[in-house]
Length: 92
Ligand SMILES: [Zn+2]
Image (cartoon, rainbow, N blue to C red; front, side, top):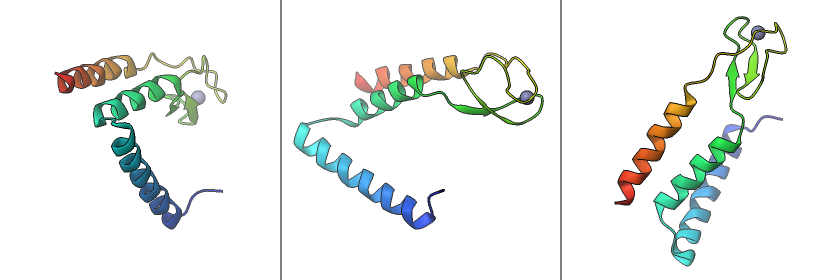
């Protein structure tokens, strides 16, 4: 069941509240939060779209389940490098 707009707002409020508490009580920084988000991104297969049939496709899929097209290598690796370098810059 998809989340309604009210549920999404409630989740956002709870996430903000939890982060504020964690940050204050565990002495964490926004940089550490961003690093964890990058780490999660690298572990979670992203949903993309097949370039041939436009059906949904996991970024880790070897072939499209619908038409068998072999997906092109994502540019997400360079995107990841860009994000990592931004984090390193903010740490200095
Ligand atoms: Zn396809």
